[in-house]
Length: 161
Picture 1 (cartoon, helix red, strand yellow):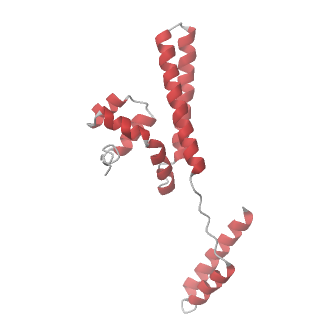
Picture 2 (tube, rainbow, N blue to C red):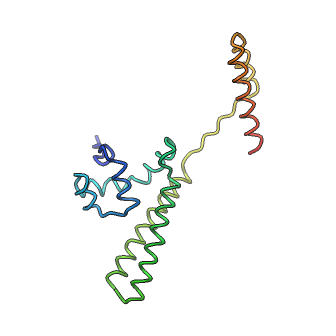
Picture 3 (tube, rainbow, N blue to C red):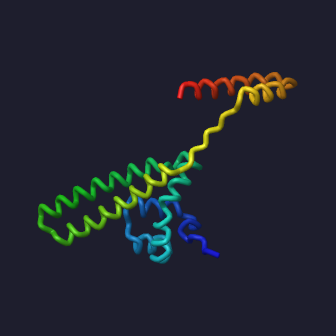
């Protein structure tokens, strides 16, 4: 039986994810700040892309696309730092920037792959089923009218896509 992720179960899990993804904090810094082990932070980092996809499905506050844009912003900053380090002949900074850029590319790739392979569910209600629903609501005229309007809007939206 696998253990649950201590970072996911942490009361400040959102802040942990933000520190890792947005601020790019080291695993040791995140571990120290939130009372976790560096190993726990490393394990947590491995499943962040999947968490982003799940979050985008279940909440409006934490969309994978928004995180992806922030990671891409970090990627641009890393490339700028790399160019500056090259211009100043700072080999240590060049290598560190290259490592960070490689990490950024891996993360962006994982997030995009998960977003693209996430299943999409389209629900269609046949006209016969719509009619049965409307007839069943016969004793409830207000509900019948509201459902008929809603079904009409769904039909219009499906026809325009």
